[in-house]
Structures are given as structure tokens and as C-alpha cells.
Length: 311
Image (cartoon, rainbow, N blue to C red; front, side, top):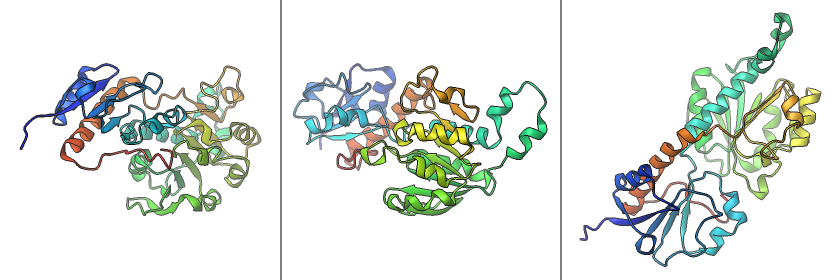
């Protein structure tokens, strides 16, 4: 039995965190031409046009991979297994989603803009998460973290996943497959969007879906801006069709100065910072260490990209 450590390359350049993560996973850092795997710490634009024949697996830095599909990276390497960082950043993003949801339900955006004591004006709008029904559309890693964070609030969760395989967790009252999503809008109090960005999920929430929500409903998007029809959302926010929206992602992105979403009092927009750089590097390193250990052991890798499904 060979005692030689599995050689794994890091690109475009190694960092101390990733070097340690590879070692923690039981492998050793090597040059690309003699490695069996590649840990990639950048985007698709500078990814190699060719890979050595010995590369079996590539670990990507991002959780969302739509840019990699648009640049035909996976199609160029049909024999290579690619994994994303899906799940690596779940806690930070879920925490951000909860913060925006609480801010909306407690009417904090308008309260923080007030310059006088307007108690009676705000009272009718202030709600609670206790007993509220929250639909988590795309209940993957982030969604499951959010379910755990919501447990103390006593919310009722409708989880929507691609397969509909039941999620057994406190607060989850139902798990539905993606094809039954149209049933959800009229049954929920609030919506958190965590689905991947694919051709099938573009404008998953539009005019018709927004019209079925309650005038007190908040829509939180921590996935990708393309999942919500921005023009329809602006109209729904202006008309009071829904209570508000918390958006860490937008379409277009970056959201340009002067866009209506910046001016609407019931819209909370953050600049795609639910997973800030100071938290991202450590979380990615932990994900790498775990997947390297799986690769060395010959186990199934986490967050394997399904090229057919698009994520």
C-alpha cells in the first residue's frame, strides 16, 4: 500500500489557508502537471484553457456557478468532476436572510428613517415570526441553515426543493417538490429565495406570484437577482401588493444609482455582502479540507455540480 500523499494543485496561486486545508484533508500541494485535483480560488475568466490528463476533480470557489456555465468551462472538461462551494457559506448567508426578514416584519426600515415619534403610524404594520408561515424556495445548504436559525421563533416552514424529499427538522411542516411551487404563494406569509440561477428559475417570482402574496408579505432574496422580475417587484412594492423586499442580490447587479429600489421605503438592499470576504476565505478553506479528505478516501464529494441540471 502506497504511503504517498495525494497531490493536489492550488490555483491561480496558493494561499496559506488553502495550503493548510489541503494538508488537513490528508493530501499535499503539488504542481498542476502532476496533480490529481485542482483547488481553484478565483473565477472562470482566468481558468486554464486546458487541464493535464491526470486531473480528476476541480473544486470551485463560488457557490453559484452560472458564470462557469456561460463560459462553457464544464463542457470543455467532460471527464472532470467539478464541485462548487455550495453549503460552505450557508451560515453567514442564512444569518443575513434572517436579519432582513426580521427587519421587514418589525418594520425597521421605515422606523430608522423616521425623524419624529410616529408610534400609531407604525403599530398596524409590525408583525412577528412566531406562528408565521415562511416559504424557503430552494431549501439547500442556506435554506437548511435558515431553518435552524428560525427554530426559536416558532415559525412554520414550507420547504421547496427540486426533489421534494422531506426535510425533517423542527418547524418544517411540509416539503414540496419544485413543480408544486405554484401552490405555495397563497399559503405563505413570507418568502425566502435560495434557489440556484438557471434558465428554468429566471423570474421565478414575477407579477402573478407577487399578486398571490399578502400585503404584509416580505420577499427575501439571497440567491441571485435573476430569480425575481425586478420591474414587477418595484410595482408590487409601490402599490403595497406586498409588505416589502430584502435583497442582497439584484437584477441588474450592481444596482445602479437612481434605481427605484434605492428610494422605496419598503425595500432593503445590501450590496451582495451576505458572504463578506473576511468570512469567505475561512469558510472556503474548511469546505476544501472536507472535500480533500473525501477525495483522498474515495468518498462522494460534497456540492458536486450537475451539468445537466445547471448547478
